[in-house]
Length: 312
Length: 312
Image 1 (spheres, rainbow over the protein chains, first blue to last red):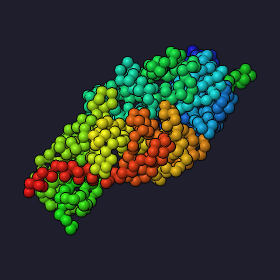
Image 2: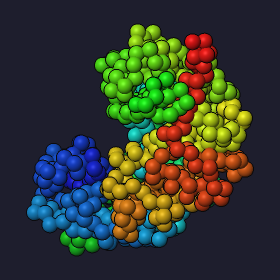
Image 3: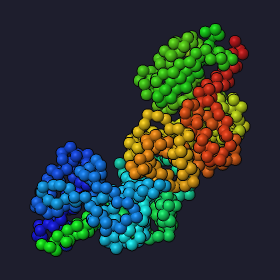
Image 4: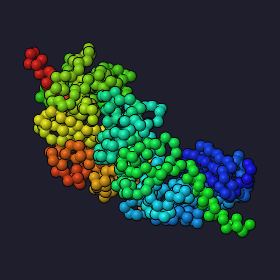
């Protein structure tokens, strides 16, 4: 490393651990990924796991660490209480939870809760990505964040006004692995955005969302009766669930009339881009999920430690 | 037994075995239920399992047996090819598959396939219940058959014109047991049709089906943020999925403008009745699922063996 590490930035989820060492200007000095999520890190001890990874990254004691994700949940290292939406993303740093830890200052960023009677919702981890989205200059519009529990977030000048979670990714995995559809979608390959079955799934869900659990069963029936391939079955399953999510986002957030940013990594981005196009939405701004969480953690670290740095 | 058994009637599914011994006039002389579905009966031998149960029922060799259900699938005793819809239910007996079995004549009733390009679908077992529905005098209208894979069937003068499967029951079980919702719905009690959360779930799904995977996540968020009880969470989950199915049946089969029969057994009937009422449908005719399958098997047995009986 040429520059000295100024911050350790950690995205710590249920099943994964990612850390970056950065210079004060944000330059990435090192990165580390491990399957040390809450499930395995809890029993080992969060402090110990953190120090092992930071030692491997060459981050000396005393360098502050900023954490986000499920590590701040009730089953994590410390519970970082939710902020209530609507909330400005700058508040994430101001209301971070300090952890008593001998090696260095450690802060955990809070999640965000939407406590309206009609639409309760929560996020933990995505709020930090959103801070990165704002840091990238997307301050007003809708942010689509695909995942196990996809989020659609309404931003207004850097304020999270409201959001909705859709169980798209979890349903996809459950139906793929453990349902009557399993045989009909049994393939290692990822679904393709160019597969006509993906497009058909999206269109059906957009046109007639009420029929979606029937469309899902047709994945099996098409395989039984029409010899549909598992590859096309998987694409149809994926298209049906993503199409339903996009239909829901249009209904709830007027997605057709707002600038949309699509934040993701890997093959899922192409699937969502195709679904958004099929729904008649304008091309979304693409944002990389990994970069956003890192930028969000960095922005929070700067807010948290700026005054201390300037006082040195 | 006072009368001599004339028929052995068997509903043989993936995980369950049910048999009735009946007199020629349909009087039930004995009933037997066992967990000897395909999964366990396959390895033991279908013929042996059948004879054990019929011996216990006091059905002598030579008395014919009529079977329906997954026993006629590719993984069952013998594959009984699907009939193609539209199809008259009298054809079930005429096109039954005979099994070579030394102790008695054995016939397996076929399932029904809907081979249209746009809406492939299959049933196996329900067709026999439908024969019972027709035998009870419901010959024209929509039959709602709740279950793991619920069916909605359009009947016209005893002809199955078309049908749709909805994955309602399977999704309910998967989400209840193995999803992020599990904690929020963890209760042994069955969901109640009178729970306001059930009604809210149904109404939301009817009003905005596109938002259903968001409504599902709200079951967890309501538990986290609003202290919603697992009992009300389970009712909301159930209402959401049943409401979506009813919305789909209205969209596909114009359920609001047809006589509807609701065929089921146990607590699920009250849930569907409530959902149908909330959707503005007229009170359905209620039919008992167990009685329907028995009556269907009996009707098929009479058609199959009437000529032989009269020739004795």
